[in-house]
Length: 149
Image (tube, rainbow, N blue to C red):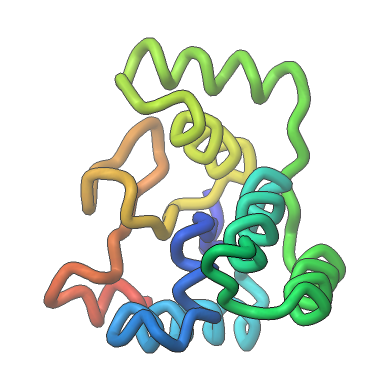
């Protein structure tokens, strides 16, 4: 395992959603640390979900050009996990064995493939460790130490 942090879609979205209140500030701190320490890991699934959700016509968070630029910068500077048949099978096993939704299992399998110790998300049970991947929900009170190190 390594000290890189896998970032789920919701954390990335909150980092750019200025209307998200305290979640915006916390997510922005996490993303900033990932950039400064060069520890950010993301998957193709997260990149796609991010782009679609922040540019959705009914609730635009950022314009298309900015979203495209962010995705491009993430691809060029962060470690990106690409899907393959082994990852699909690992996600299916996560879905079966751990009762994750399939898409959450795919995120977990991507973090596991990247050999990251932490997966930042609000979609999993906080502090739970599943096959070496710890889920961190930074929006739960008292998590300041988890964010910083």
